Length: 567
Image 1 (cartoon, rainbow, N blue to C red):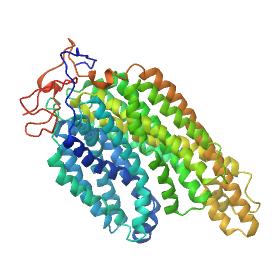
Image 2 (cartoon, rainbow, N blue to C red; image 1 turned 120 degrees about the horizontal axis):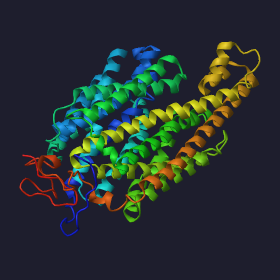
Image 3 (cartoon, one colour; image 1 turned 30 degrees about the vertical axis):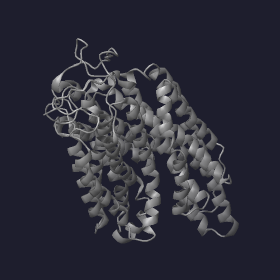
Image 4 (cartoon, rainbow, N blue to C red; image 1 turned 60 degrees about the horizontal axis):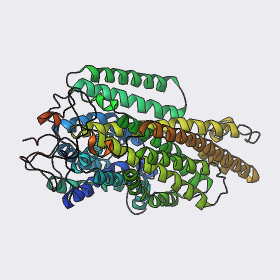
């Protein structure tokens, strides 16, 4: 089966049915797992000192406590997206909610570091089932392109908001409760999802998907886990033999996975999706946007806490302001995307982000706080525009029966982009910092202290606190200046990447905004005629219809061919 464009005459293809109150209420329910999964990426930032004092993990265990959630989440996204297409997206979502809630309880009351690591891994499995399911269900709930654009924009805003809210909520809870409370906040939301999900969310699946590709699933896991792990280890400790070998193994597994998907009788991932430039370029744009936002985030956190001397809670609250300021940018981008070619709107988003990063390249240790916050709001605004329109375009172009796999690919690109951003921008910043500090260390400093001061700003601050009088002040001033130089270098590289991405977006996406993205893309056979029956499935099962979506026996006639409801 080929994946090509099919545009029906307006007379034979009436507009798809609009979503009603029930679909929008269902969207509100879908935002719960979206918020919590994104929050769990950052919610542990402030809890680490507290759980370390109680559980006494080793340094390696502490790293696994922080990282295992993201590793497992990234490794299972493609598998879970394909599984949802086969067993049903609502079923997978609710199963993931149950697992996520139970794992949160285990993590909250963990009695050892090993128990907490295992619970965080289970949370990663649950998160991998929730993320692609939410976006895929949005694809199936909202058939009208304008409404789907608004829904995806709201979803994208919730994702960004969850990452920003996580540290603030964590800090607030830790002021009044024990460290496990940062996990228990998941439980009530998961209970609400389990209660409301069956009432509001219809079931969607692709009955023509065939048997589940277990070898392909294992290969996807072997590709994503070592790749993300290798990139993060190189970002943290620099290039070394072990992470390089792990990364190479992940890339080899990725090549084997692609070969498997090209040759398997029932592949778990339809590579035909990438033959449409709108889909493949949208995945790339998402990856580049996440590359910039994640790669630079660590610099701003350190700048507020170590350069400006803010407490963790204070810096988290200030970090929240730019996120709140850009909350309306995703809906605004959706409106612009309907009035003009999406290529230019996405390109504009990248240009705005590049401008924000260039602005930050003028940052100095003594710059006013508003300077940092406004610049952060500028680049965040641009990247929210890019990610919301990229998600909407990719999901809109994917056939409904493949929405789960398409969502998983988007999320996988996001995970890889974040890992690459930390590795590349982090390495550039570290190199600049070490070079600046090489001639700034006071004479006679012990080698261990000198190494600590050269490695990180936090290490230099610790060493400066032990030095007498002006020597400590001079070292801390030099370290803050070196760190600001490293931040300037990282954001300039990010700005360059954003500028190149703007050009690529206009060149590669031009002409796709409007007609194709608003409902002309379906799976078609060799003759160019939409396939019928199970091959074009992906609509609600009988008895599970929602307002505005035909039930069994009333075949839809929207611009996207969705076949007949499964019985």
